[in-house]
Length: 140
Image (cartoon, rainbow, N blue to C red; front, side, top):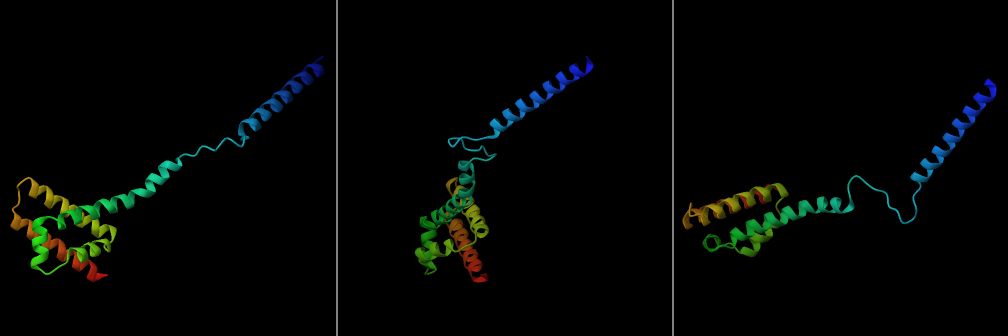
């Protein structure tokens, strides 16, 4: 009687293994309409890839915005500099150099808008930014 009982258990165990293997294989198989799930979606990857370009664009805009202000225009004119040439030079800066100038430009604009600095001070800041721009390009 024991040999028959052990055969029954063996048959039951083999049947369970076959069924579980079949269900695992079906679960892993993909139909043509299914796409594999990744940890990071394609949209997230594209958004992350676009961040440096967006940051650079925002930094360029901050520097160019300060340089197009009336006090900056006055500083450019008094030093015989053309805004177009300066804007082209801004585009040639490295991301790090541009980020530093953008930070200074934003701070100067904020201080000027709050009345913390005068037109004269803003002109001096613009001149410092222009010198930094020239030095950064000359070092290259």
